[in-house]
Length: 107
View 1 (cartoon, one colour):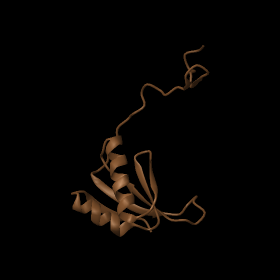
View 2: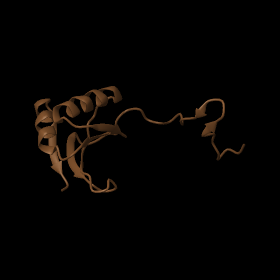
View 3: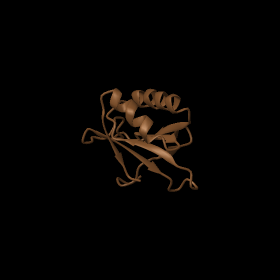
View 4: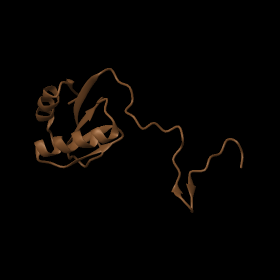
């Protein structure tokens, strides 16, 4: 095996994660941005929440709280919370109540 190649899959263990992979949220400017997006979703809109500086477990807790508040589904992908539908105002009010600095971004 050469120095430039690395093992990504093994039949013994399955997918192998790189050792330098980060498990905390990327550094931001402290402003939470809430945006609506339809691209790549067959016209269905979702609300994206980016810029939160939380641990992965806290992301899941907050996503669950926001989904319950909005009465919709959603998920957490790569430190971005996705909530189905246009829920920007509801999410903004909740995050401001929790003490975050929030901006509505995009369309």
